[in-house]
Length: 499
Image 1 (cartoon, rainbow, N blue to C red):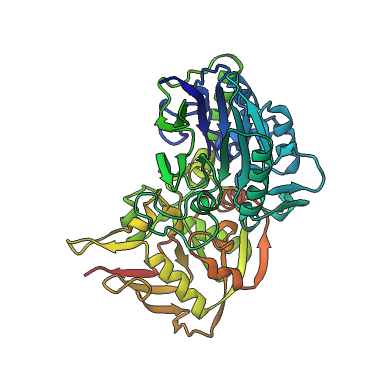
Image 2: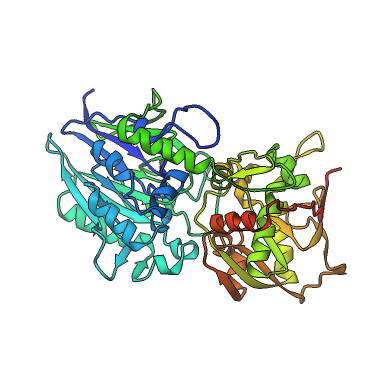
């Protein structure tokens, strides 16, 4: 049966252009440069946001005042539409505006208002295809962005609840004669599409609700970094492509209006030439510069094993956080992808092991809140039939979220993993004294966690004492330069009981 519409869909590219994960040597099958989207008059190329920030390449360009290389890559692939994700604001208003004004794709964001009118934002568009099909597309973004992003990067932007803006856009598109309704949503699914199991109680992700309340034919989701080759909620077809330009979606609609979709990897890793080769080489020299030394090497282990017994990297990050803010207690998570380093630490080591554009926030917490936070981290484990702890499915489905397990410093604690989730913290001591519910402490965390993400919503009720607005990767660099060789004593401040 002949297809009436073909869509190539990417999202959460996070600046991955080259066939390089910046962690392991050699080319790999990822990167927008390795993707090819043949177009005709009935084809659309669409991106779901978080394209601008997330790799050493994009940080290098932004810090050196160079235009984003995403501009050329997206224009070459003739993108038609894109929406914005939370990380697209990380380099500031001007960088984002310059990028959007140079990319030929139209940016759709119905629930983001720019009071200055500097960004070329449209709520929705109808595209008439060569065969006469009128495709209506509305762009949406999770309204949680202000919880994570620097306030100075969001000045004069308003992030409104997406559902009502989507409702109005759908009404207008139908009135304008759209034959097909597509939601382009930088947000994910709040339920497992196969079982209906609730994945989150918050409204960070509302894809299922969008499908329940609005007559979308296709919902393109993002932000969760999950892979949904094809899903369905009610009458709506749902797709999500993962992250870091490892895959893209090929979506088709046949003459009956039925959608089909699959995820594809780039077939051949891109080999740079000319100016892009020179940029790649310059980036490599920059990243492989030694910036300091440490007294203990970091060799990543299995995720559960590190969470059970501690991590050199977590010790380093907590040490940086405490020195940068003066807080007595600290907590930090680790990214899903980790790179080992020896006694010499390079910029590449820092930027791969901390790829986020986070800052630091110190909140005043009580002993009661500290226990809730530790219980949330203790929920990372489930017990296997062999009596050994392993990573809970909650942190693996619909995508891996190891970064939502926090390592704490400044507090001594015990997890009894034989006990039920929510009642596993059996000891908490600070400075040799048992923590009482009414005790208060200054706890430093990254801005992502301070926004309540990852199941830590209770932090939002804790007063902010102070902040350090420097990018945390810069603070790590400065710490290593200041202390080289940096002493990384093993804190050994917690214990997990398995059996």
